[in-house]
Length: 299
Image 1 (spheres, rainbow, N blue to C red):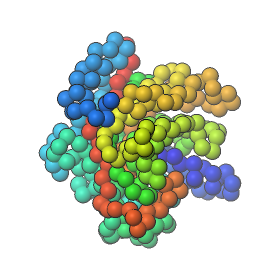
Image 2: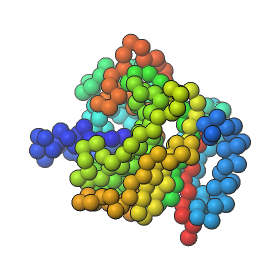
Image 3: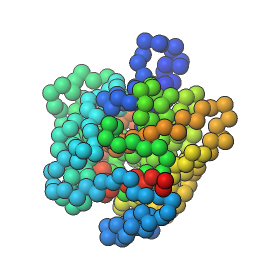
């Protein structure tokens, strides 16, 4: 989730008193049409690849209502201003917002409701809850492949994301950030992948991919991935690489992608990037995650 709104405000105002998110503290801050069995077969093929080994995974196969595996995931909770994007949602650890659906997926659900402690809030209507989970403190890795098979919700103001943050105690953007998948549902057929680091351009280094034939990412599951080496990060959708960025392209910018990163999944609502939900936005809205796989380079 890009944090450039806060960064831009700080740079413009020169306010040293504004606290940036600390990346190491979690409280701050055609494959899509194949069957599940076909995807598991693909896992076996990838695992047999001599250059990659399956290092960490979650298949979300528990019963309906079960929380994400606490040995693998922790919750980020609360609302703005800690996220830095003028978001509207208030993240909770309730199963109503984050739980397994009993059909092999994790459901992250944005709901229109009011809970104690949600107000006052600096942005929005103080009546939207959602979920955000992270592997911080449970798993992080340097290099390899991160991928997830996800079906996103649709609606103005929806902002589903699968991304990574540098597992350090440095503030953003010095720790580094890799956005594997961001979809703002005023553009439901387009995914964005972006790289962030110290002194990067205001919009980071990134690109996007648009599904052919006016298709929408909300219509089916798709596999979003990055392949990360010491010298390059490449983004792909359903196995098709659409953007890469090399260390040699950094010029005067610092490459901060040689340290462990941890993963995050969340469904934000509102904010600077997608804009506000409107009368057409339907709640509850659900982001479904079939699996998350992380592969390590073979030793």
